[in-house]
Amino acid sequence: MKILVTGASGFLGAHVMARLAQDDHEVVGLCRRPGSRDKCVAGDVLDPSTLEGPMTGCDAVVHAAGGVSHRPEDSDWLHEVHVTGTENVLAAAKAAGVERVVHVSSSGTVAVSERDRVHDEDSPEPLAVIKGWPYYRAKLFAEHAALARGAIVVNPSLLLGPGDTELSSTGSVKLLLDGQLPAVPGGGLSFVDVRDVADAIALALEHGTPGERYLLGAANLTLADYYARLARIAELPAPKMTIPAVGGRLMGWLPVGVKQAVADKFGADTFELEMASHYWYLDNAKAQRELHWSPRDPGETLGDTVRDLRSRD
Image (cartoon, rainbow, N blue to C red):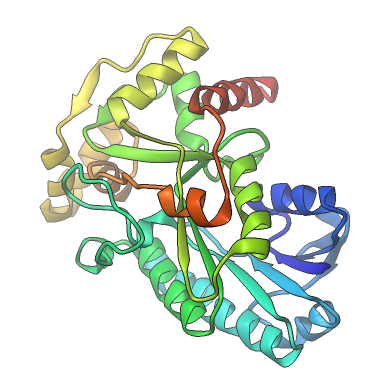
């Protein structure tokens, strides 16, 4: 099968390229700077004229391109990259007669709340929670476009594992290793190994149902437990201070100057503190049942993440 992977130069995209090649697929990556990766061609999801050529002759597309920012001033850019970019990829795939599209979304389009409840694919969409978070809002609207076109959607939680050279997903782990994480927000997260998400995408191409979403996560932990586990693996002291969850959620109501003072004290962006004071727990049963997917032991992922980051110091 010939498969086009958008965002092939990213943390996840590179793992997807390698994983699909293991199954002897003909894999082509779409990158804005093709020299950064082997088997990549030049293309930009915001320029439809660059998509027609790479899409020609493909049997499937994995759409993993995107950008990450939590700054309100980047709202328009995030909408363009995620929503318009997704619409362009879907239109090009349809024009080229591509039969299957796997769209990479985020667990944050469904699995986030102020309380520590576990979400599945049928949980209500948390628009009231994420409406002030431009990244997750854009991911949700992009997901709507993908589902409407019959794409298979995968929703990974926080990506960990080796190979995050830009610290796009493992930056907080690096802060812990560098002794720059003085306090832990009071919320909870789900995380998953990037290599297991690449496996899930390969399985979704084979077993996924068009128009369905699949939550991908390996462990649900409070942030205090998460950083304590990382600290034990790294043989470092865990952060001793905890920011109560309700305090972090109140960040959105504080005056700008006060918010910034709090953020500076705890070494985090104000919006990151607010998001980390929520709970991002999920149930991966649907992916295990329908995709025949199973994540590795979470401890292996945490250990490999720590070792990889230290190897690049």
